[in-house]
Length: 237
Image 1 (tube, rainbow, N blue to C red):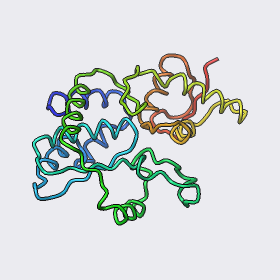
Image 2 (image 1 turned 180 degrees about the vertical axis):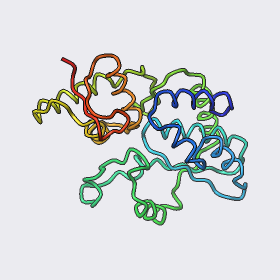
Image 3 (image 1 turned 180 degrees about the horizontal axis):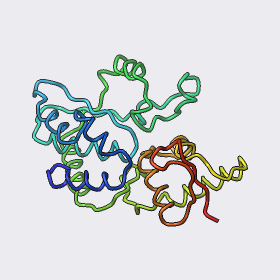
Image 4 (image 1 turned 90 degrees about the horizontal axis):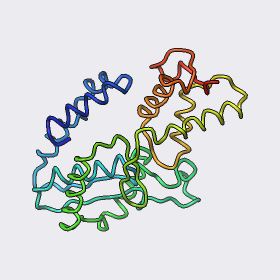
């Protein structure tokens, strides 16, 4: 992703497979990779940098990518892993929502503020040895052709693109039986996968795999594919 060729390859792969990718890609300019690279390069040396992430493959890959882009920066860089740092106790009012926040997306802004005020002097500064290790790991990742990665035992694991397919089929079958349904709303399937599985997954990737299963005769559908909550699927008989 640090090269123009890599960005174009990534864009092409996603545009071919992910519904509505083109719209969000062009409408969300500030968060496109090339723009984020520019933003990072323009951070003055006197400014402090703290990278927030969680114990999931997306953010761990992103951590390595950002540290690689900042490899020439001599001033300290701090990292906070919210999964390790913000593990909640059962009496915390947020515990029922997410007992162990696996990603930044489920951490409330007030909780981040509370943590910063409490632990500002205890933030982890990444030593140069670890920074170089993360940089090497990014270069290794960038050479891999794998499409799907998981976070397992504190490391990034490469798995086949169809790794989640059987789990999706099992979930659809289970919902059909439990609710006595013929067809199951796709939004419901993806919602349960996102909340019940042990690691965060992309809803767009999950829908891509559901549509792959439809195209390859594993699922029947009715409704309007491409509009997640307006079509339903069932195990093909």
